[in-house]
Length: 154
Image 1 (tube, rainbow, N blue to C red):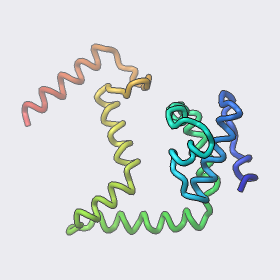
Image 2: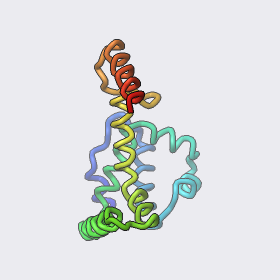
Image 3: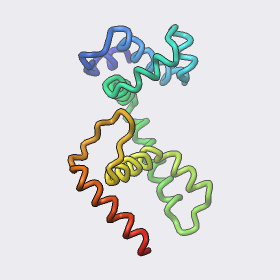
């Protein structure tokens, strides 16, 4: 597995310690099911530091790329089969609350993407995110006023 992890391109701005710990984290998480607090304790890094690093999109992206690189094709195939089954259960007419909850838990990333999209359409960006909304203040104001007046009509 270490050979596969070394194939993942390392963002230039990451420090050697970050790269080493990122590889160890992915390996320990995959092989041992180790959580963040146990990992940080084992490798003498504070959880505050770890989460600060994860706030860096390049570090987080590197972790995600490492994780994607060690997942076998059979694991990916099984995931897609289960994913399809969960979608079928949650979208049937008489879906139970448990089935819907399972869907929402499994597809939390879709829910999050929809939230981000809605926030972007409203001209709202999370703190620290520069966003890519190129509208002027007046355009944003007019869009907000339009939405507010349309809500009153409903």
